[in-house]
Amino acid sequence: MSAVVQSISSAAPEAERELTDGFNLIIDALKLNGLDTIYGVPGIPITDFGRMAQAAGIRVLSFRHEQNAGYAASIAGFLTKKPGICLTVSAPGFLNGLTALAHATTNCFPMILISGSSEREIVDLQQGDYEEMDQLAVAKPLCKAAFRVLHAQDIGIGLARAIRAAVSGRPGGVYLDLPAKLFGQVMDAEEGRKSLVKVIDAAPAQLPAPDSIKRALDVLKGAKRPLIILGKGAAYAQADDEIRQLVEKSGIPFLPMSMAKGLLPDLHPQCAGAARSTVLKDSDVVLLIGARLNWLLSHGKGKSWGDQPKKFIQIDIEPKEMDSNVEIVAPVVGDIGSCVSALLAGMGGAWQAPPAEWTTAIAKKRDENVAKMAPRLMNNNVPMDYHGALGVLRTIIAERPDAILINEGANTLDLARGVIDMHQPRKRLDVGTWGVMGIGMGYAVAAAVETGKPVLAVEGDSAFGFSGMEVETICRYNLPVCIVIFNNNGIYRGTDVNVAGDDPATTVFVKDARYDRMMEAFGGVGVNAISPDELKRAVNAAMDSGKPTLINAVIDPTAGSESGRIGNLNPQSALKKK
Ligand code: OXT
Ligand code: ADP
Ligand code: MG
Image 1 (cartoon, rainbow, N blue to C red):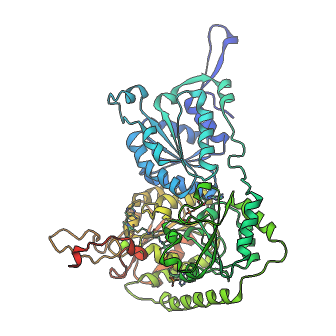
Image 2 (cartoon, rainbow, N blue to C red):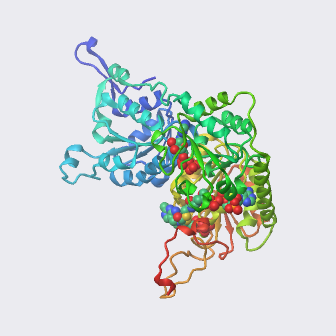
Image 3 (tube, rainbow, N blue to C red):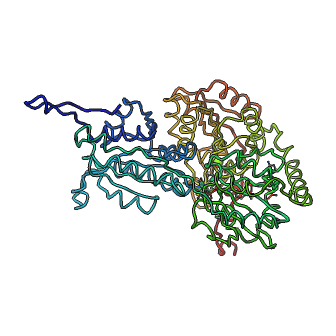
């Protein structure tokens, strides 16, 4: 039911009118479009709006910092295919949320950042209003679309445009600017109701051209060493059955990008995750499904891809993505569900499996790598190394395949990605396209809220620090989140020394810090674990109880390497080597 703010009566009873206002119209518009959760931080001018939204049945989760609320909204978008909503105050709150909006856009997650803003007349004359900033102009280059609503009667259309922009085509972040004055604007309730828009078919199917399907199948048929790469776009698309059918019917080995792990289980016989270098180098035809040829795939060229000629087929909803780094010989533009279905239909009944020589070579490499890693995962060393600790977590995720794994850090990220097998789609959430630190607690809150599943957040000690205050949020909402901090006393390692003075080196933290006590401060469970056995017991207890838990896992400070597996990206000073 639409909210009605008041009824005013003039002298004549027939002139009695129901009124609504900006506050209520925004709430009604969100609800009408099934947007039932808001992640944000209250304050002028949106405090009352948050209260009223909560009273109207929208779940409003208050964070300690807008960036974390924004990351929560971004991953809510990824998990649900509906735009995640982040709500902030003006200027500084807006800017705090903006990093997450840019992150959503970069990662192709649908999200709407709604920020209150100060008085337009004063802002535009730069007369020094409270939290003055031309937020629309600032947001524009960092998101997919940006809109401002000045009149209550435009709220419905404004939100409809924001929703469509966020979820249609390549999903991304949208900014919606709501000046303070808008909230209190009053209008006739019936007119207000009529002004709302229920967005129909916000992300319509985009069918691929039949020629593009034929071309792709022709290239695939000619392959001797084909490979399918699944990216997080494939996970986002929720076309899990079609993708599985394509992989299994074709018999082609597949390589999951990190957030596509589990789309088909990592233990699937066709999974080439543990033979990554081999398949990139030696493949002759590569079918990309919802994965860009960006830095994470070495731009499709160079040493990682070997010197054999490659042919790329790419499925993507964004036509401009094609040929962005190397030539795409068979672009297939459309939504992944439709494209994969069309490929399946075109494959017909009899599809020639790839040559056994290729698949057995991959299986051999994979088995070698797995066998090499296996004994390292079983160690019970004190202090723990990454492998000992991760071996335990890998078993826990295998036993609880529907739990959501959140992962950030450098070594903590790169090693966990390889060690922890995923078994179901969209269960691994991590730093994404930018390799950004700080997604941890925001993602944890949203993952728990949106899915109702238990969450295990595996965090480097540095990574955790970017959003650590949200442990209070996790306790406040009593969410089933277990945080494991791989505490090696610093960024990459805890052993750096400043050779020139008394200050600590730039990458080290307070030695032997007890992050578990942060959790206890807010009523959650804190555990200090020094061995893999202790870690296992503590995580299992947390996952069984569903109580907010933080485990300080003490990791050997010498165990990590600079920047994990991407140390090659660090520029080097030639002078240093003199
Ligand atoms: O085939 P080969 O032989 O090559 O072997 C490969 C696989 O086949 C094999 N493999 C397996 N073997 C056996 N069994 C299994 N199951 C298996 N699975 C795979 O293993 C190898 C490797 O496989 P992988 O990992 O798939 O392959 P590879 O070559 O690594 O893949 C390349 C990439 C690029 C795809 C991959 O490396 C990747 O996805 N990397 C992402 C890296 C990333 O994003 N890193 C985060 C950023 S690092 C840095 O920027 C940090 N900062 C700066 C900072 C950031 N980021 N953000 C902000 C806002 N401010 C500052 C900071 C501050 S990290 C950081 C904090 C770090 O400290 P922490 O305390 O948090 O963390 P610690 O390091 O733990 O201390
Ligand atoms: P990864 O980092 O896992 O390699 P990327 O973020 O680079 O994945 O790529 C995701 C790609 O998926 C983007 O190019 C995006 O346009 C595309 N994409 C997202 N959703 C869909 C969809 N429903 N259908 C087709 N392509 C999609
Ligand atoms: Mg660390």
